[in-house]
Length: 503
Image (cartoon, rainbow, N blue to C red; front, top):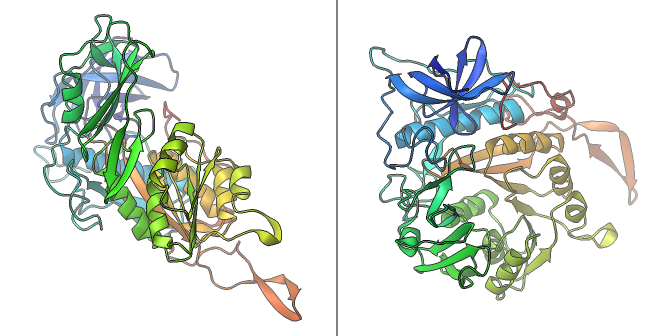
């Protein structure tokens, strides 16, 4: 560890680094860009299959390389950001590549980066350089669809204004990738300064002037020290100007208050410990994307899994009206309490303070002859995803449409593969750059029952004196559909083409 190696950098990979090779070994290198030739310092050689490294000397820079706007970014420094050295266009293309690869490898889908929205990089002295992986990429699930999913990562400026319909980006106003994070948890140095940890380290780097922190967050902490504290949490609401600061452990400072977030004139009251999207434009953009995907109708029944503070439940309740129903499931007590306050004027919302499990999802609308129906569903699971058992339980209710809000492309790919086994296919996908300068990206995927040619099994049922044929849901989709048939998922998942340290 600590040795210097020379690398030719390949594609962006999931996790905020690029892939390269050194002597036949895979190297995951940070602070580099595709196509560059770099000298890198090995930071972790403890694995047989791969090493980690930081690019410390850029021999052939990519044209997308920029000077990092944050003085704390770089090798051995703050680990809060991954891509400060790349312009925003390169960041979004890299995220689109990560999504497309995850859909291919884990979802069994034919996916590619939209070349018009995200043109490939061109290096000096070359007419065009297709930057590909340093190692071959194969799918863990067979890919046979003929119409590829084209991935576009949309910009969402901090002011959150603009057209959320997908035409020309999800927002308007300035777009520099800075000053967007409204909720932050800082570590504290021995001197009481706020800071963030170095990459893959417990070392705290003082960052009083963090460039991605929203101005409200920066102002609330300016000049302050927190001796004796372990962590400081800040929640700021740009829509109301309120800020709450929580210091851990409790007792080091006064207890924090709550902030009010406003989305489309609806107010959500919550504390800094309740999950809320950290980008100011995210709530409005994601709500619009989910409503546009599901198109809820009056009188319908909707499920909201991992409902948090009730963001999606609130607007689905408006759409289904007083004659409809929204069942929202959330395990965090503080989030449920916040949702109960914020949604008190919507009697059609039923809040369930339960963990989302296969059993709770199966029984959410009752069972037997008195069971209700589920027309639409939205789920916003944690980074690990919902998992195949929860997906199967949800889709067993046969909703006509499901909106899956994903913060991790690999988990999304796996859950899309699970959905395919239940007869559902990916109909549309939108991706939003809600975390500029970092490796994170948010997706909204629309799932619907797979369209198949009518197929009749040999089994018929006598129903009320008539004969009803049962549709065979195992029939594969017709050519050209993006769905993946159940038969293709029945085999064992193949090994990854290259070892990934976070999978």
